[in-house]
Image (cartoon, rainbow, N blue to C red):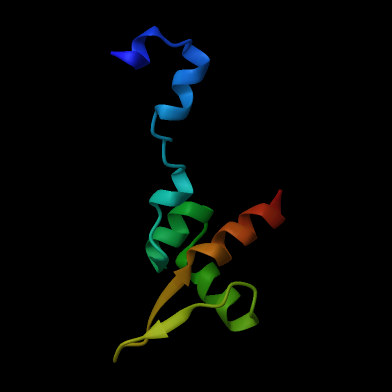
Length: 80
């Protein structure tokens, strides 16, 4: 096989890239999942939603909260 005779550095471009942890996250994240990621209580996220710190997407008859992946990542970056 041709790939076996090439240098290891040249083989890298043929290997599939490993997905990043953030690539595995869905676009909308539930309240509990967001709490687990941010390590905070659900009531904290509810208050942040009221104050506009981390605004939730509301949907359904029960008006369940979902959070955008981008918003959570931005909040994590700003905390550092």
